[in-house]
Length: 230
Ligand SMILES: Nc1ncnc2c1ncn2[C@@H]1O[C@H](COP(=O)(O)OP(=O)(O)OP(=O)(O)O)[C@@H](O)[C@H]1O
Ligand SMILES: [Mg+2]
Image (cartoon, rainbow, N blue to C red; front, side, top):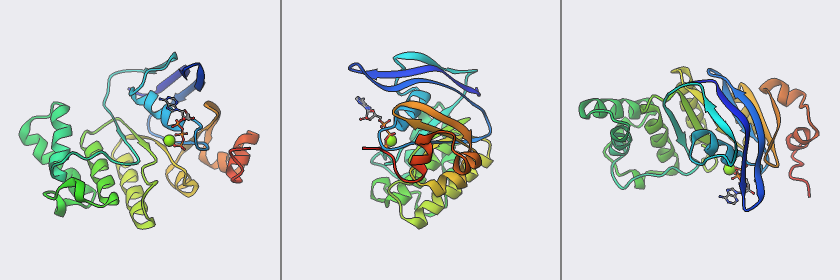
């Protein structure tokens, strides 16, 4: 299904241009990190790529059929057990009963939560819920996983655990596209950076180059902690 092609993708609301004519080719294999100041359009771009919203201009084109999944900053858990949350997602994806149980249990084991499978998902801690959300996405065996600030509300220990899981998902063959405000995390997890500024794609470069020699004044200011400008 990859590469993902963004062809002059724009998103307007009430005459305001929130995402502006983004052209990009996002390849399989790499881990893509979307960076930018608050309000730059990162979450909108992920939603456009995942198909949760439709562009008002241009188009998002996948070169084939495939599975994709998305994980949000605050996981949405159904009022049932951790295991049942994953089984429900697999049922919706058309996975049959026996296979569903097996894959759900295996996914919880992989994120280190095998022992809390029967516990109600809504009473789990934020970090545990995020791991269940990652297990739920991983169980779908997506070709692409979109993650919108997956560690934004987690403490350092939980963040490290989520980073380990994201690396393992990538190692299992899933393309990663994620946003973060944690620049250390962008360096650790990213291969390439899409840097957004005021809804436009200001820079698309390898992570090393983005951090050592940003090509735009906006990216340099962002890395110095000087964005948004007043
Ligand atoms: N449905 C909508 N209707 C109107 N404006 C919207 C809508 N969704 C987002 N916006 C606006 O679009 C801009 C970009 O929003 P977006 O959530 O993509 O930013 P972001 O880069 O993810 O920011 P943050 O770092 O704070 O998460 C913001 O100014 C936001 O207020
Ligand atoms: Mg956002």
